[in-house]
Image (cartoon, rainbow, N blue to C red; front, top):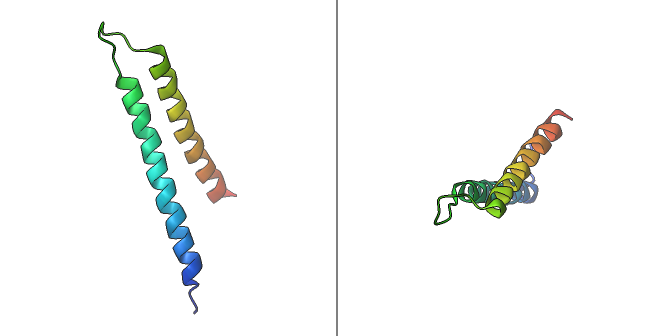
Length: 70
């Protein structure tokens, strides 16, 4: 059995970057969804950005499931 260490390193690197990016986007969604103005209302732009961040996360999960199932 021969292990291709370069390919394994590439998979590890891409997985690490993708995980950190996805967690970052999800965190932005949480922050945007919890943003409040001084009068207690939520800004429309923050809410739309939050929904967009959640949509990106859902798309990434769906792509991962599709890739595994294909």
